[in-house]
Length: 267
Image (cartoon, rainbow, N blue to C red; front, side, top):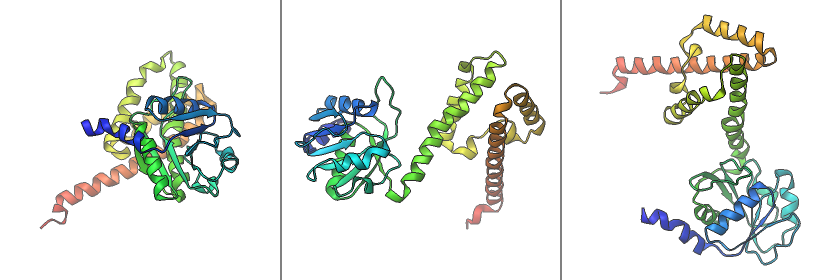
């Protein structure tokens, strides 16, 4: 426990200060606040195009489409990093570079970096050590994602977070047509996410599609068609995808049962 608590302090000592944060949006402001609280000498948040001549490390907290231009404006000496999940290191051009993508949501109230996962990549050993030091100073948990995997990784994050909210919005709107508040659905959502995290999608799946209850699914579809016809396509797509998942889950159970019956090849 003592070693874990000491890790951020050691990380701060390892950083070559100061660190400049370019970009005064939500992420830039949250990052400056968190780094300052961690004891890192930080400058910013600086507006795009502002000089960061004295910085040893420059972090670009700008939209993906502006990363290349922002990197081009930085003098050659500092290490330069960006915070994008989908953009590769090539956007940072000639710089010795790294990236840190915190897997969290930043709101107007800021961000809770402590304990959050963070995807990192780096162009050199020194850049990697800097990325790890910054992640440790913020109390995040690092994992590495190669440049050629970043788009797939970021898409997975969008499906897990953004698309989930879309689905829950659909659920809340449909529930409201029956006079049911979305808060009544929240325990189901939490239980489903907890089961998915601990057991995986195939074992976590429950409900009428998983049971093969065609009549219930048909009644659900009719209700959606009547009350929210504009969402019927989404309901059908989700039903089809859930049917595929249920089919895979059933096949997995049959394979496990067969292995158990035959001794699984054990001698």
